Every structure is written in structure tokens, then in C-alpha cells.
Image (tube, rainbow, N blue to C red; front, side):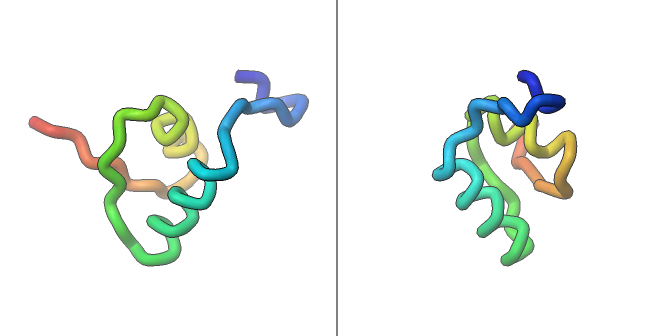
Length: 50
């Protein structure tokens, strides 16, 4: 990922899903690596099985 130059390969659909989870205080259940990358910079909660 090249965040410094604005390239991140995260699709609009993933961004909308993340925004919806953040806005509605939801925990996301997904296996997509993009959400884990976004969670490094946003307070996105991702469900992890134990």
C-alpha cells in the first residue's frame, strides 16, 4: 500500500461499508484485507473469531 501518494487500492464499496459501520457503531465481520488496513487508521471494529 502506498498511502503517502494517495494510492491504496481500497474500493468505493469497501469505503461505504466501513463508513456505515462507523456511523452506526457496528462491528464488521469480514475477511477482506482492506478492512484490516483501514482499521489501522480508523476506529473500525472488526469481529475476530476466537
